[in-house]
Length: 289
Image (cartoon, rainbow, N blue to C red; front, side, top):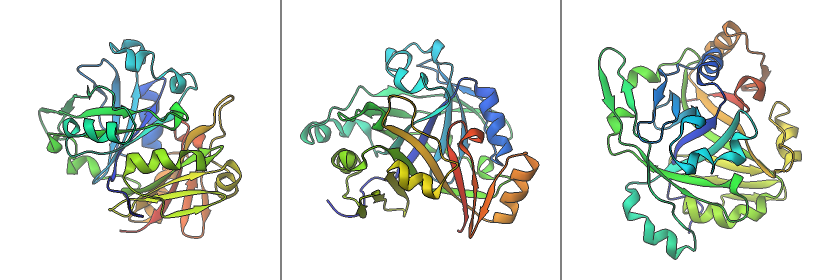
């Protein structure tokens, strides 16, 4: 393995109690939120915040899920209320992955269809053919990752939905809050296909081929930099905590947050919002291309 992962970030899932309320919260953050959709084969609903090569997924209505994987298997997350669920990494084709995971000593769960009907910006609809598979972390289920493929990419990445009032362009990276980051290095290395780019007593950093990052940080290290980040829920050791989002203009981002009534902290080169305004996740906005 190398210091660069072989997989890039695909999308991020946040479980919410009410899709419409969550969607409105994200509009107040300055994101353009797609119309609510239903997963045709699994029963849950979602709303999407779309970027050029990744997306955020707000998912809810687990009581309607017709899959035990979602109705019962996700209880460790859903029992915490609005909370970051998992990060998905890219896969070119899930069917080709099964033997690879067995060789790595990890089990690839059954491929799940996440197909949904998408309303096009101007007129009409298109169906996605997205699929996912979970790779459970044997050390801590809450620290698990999953992989996804999108056989109909034009139904996932739609330019008109990528224009946001806060001028965001892409996800630069994501930070996990972990009681013991070192415990998860082997698992994250196997799933991402790369060794850490950086390691210290405070945490671990993985970097993708597209220049994205995933960091696993101790509570003291993360909260020293982001006091707005969430705390660990009682009885847990892992939680998704902070997104770093690249925006074209911090000034436009600040206006969008002001217009949305979202409190924010302005630092040297960034704007930070609290977890209470992001369905359990804090946001750091930085200017870039």
